[in-house]
Picture 1 (spheres, rainbow, N blue to C red):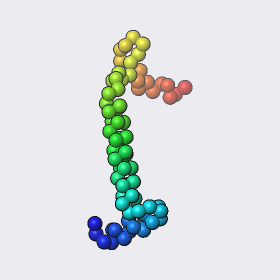
Picture 2 (picture 1 turned 180 degrees about the vertical axis):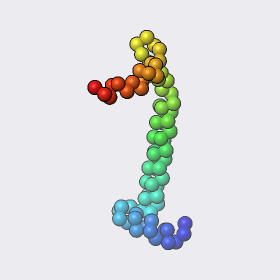
Picture 3 (picture 1 turned 60 degrees about the vertical axis):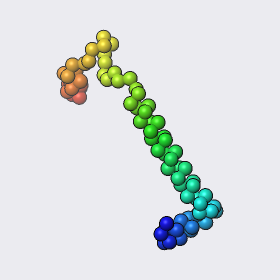
Picture 4 (picture 1 turned 120 degrees about the horizontal axis):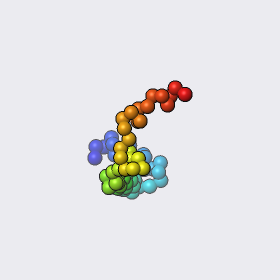
Length: 74
């Protein structure tokens, strides 16, 4: 590690009242947990059932019903 970076990390570790190695371990653990959370969220998202917009009869609504501008002129 470059010395100027090591000095800055030592200061941050001292402010956190911990050793430099413990400080770096905490940073790495947080980053790994963040990655794990992201991957879990992506798996949940892509495993969802895709249904889209359906009506009671199971058919897709018509374009006209979706973009009915008369609703805004009441």
